[in-house]
Image 1 (tube, rainbow over the protein chains, first blue to last red):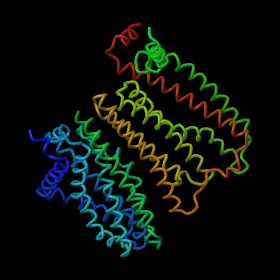
Image 2 (cartoon, rainbow over the protein chains, first blue to last red; image 1 turned 45 degrees about the vertical axis):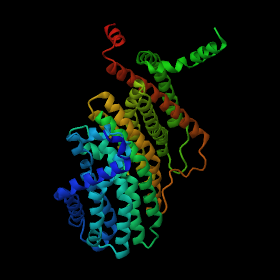
Image 3 (tube, rainbow over the protein chains, first blue to last red; image 1 turned 90 degrees about the horizontal axis):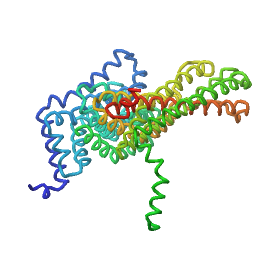
Image 4 (spheres, rainbow over the protein chains, first blue to last red; image 1 turned 90 degrees about the vertical axis):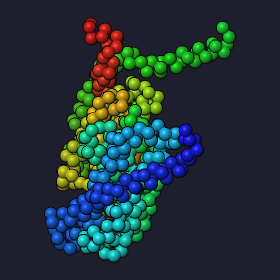
Length: 229
Length: 257
């Protein structure tokens, strides 16, 4: 056994590489949350109004809600496949701190699902008639906010991974915890649109993400240990 | 006997009462003894408080009689938050120290908390109609109360979804603790959102320091609600204990009697 010779850092790196490789080999799955994001946003002009000023006002909120839902939809993929094929048990049994391994997995998941949302967001900003400044702030807010979504989501998936059909339950458990991200994220863009400084919102968003970074991996690790048993 | 062992044994005795709370059989007896008397006290306080509040207390100079819903609204709002705290802390104790009774306390508090939150929301919106003109205002406090209701529902849903009771208690304990950390953040973010969003917020009461004749019934109702909470919790705890310990000797004895 050469477990002792593998440092935690390299274990995390290996895990990250593995998860990214799996994601890259199933590129179709990777695309789905982004497509969902675009479709949900484009439903709003159809259902509410194509009116330019109204769209502009509601745009940031709509884009953020859609980003939230797209993240939620993709969330199960973070632990469920590994739970089904038994990888998760091996991770729990490994000598490395589970919270750090969970962090590596969450990072991989964010790179696969969060990052595409951020990249596509300027396009959606244009669709929702946002100004150039607002689009930049929107992308910044998503960069700062989506890590918190993935981190908190990992706790929820950790708690529900043992349950067979957990789709709705996961959203019940997770969505209330997303409220601060939504408020600060949409708030930043809205502040820009009325020519206020978006910085306080962005800083609060960043601090919330950092706080989640400190707390959530520990909570997810505990949750996984309980679920895997 | 040396003085040292005497000391430790007397210290042991001092803490003995506390350890008994770890024994389901003892807690069952305790709950059976106290649930009823506490409930009676709650009932008496309800009668006195409602009489004082609805009949004796003067009408408000601005809101007339509609303010009287405060005697239900404020205690339920307080208990909604207090129940979440009790639930999360006892679930956390159960998670860390593996105390079964503590898990069951959390389990029996959760529906009560959801009920109080619901009461606070309903009374708040009923109060909103005469004072603000609509049933629902996205006021910061109402909104965070709504999120609190969602948190309770999430907790209950999760603990019902997991079949194994031990796993269910432990998993929902993690959720309760995460929620407990998140709750102040949600509260303040909602408050900032509202003030940033709408400028002037509606303040709940003009609050020119509340009249004593209104304050006394409010305090009585506050205690009534708390006693009711305690009594209802003990009743629920009894059921939870019986169903959790259904295979043990002491439950068989009780059931056979």
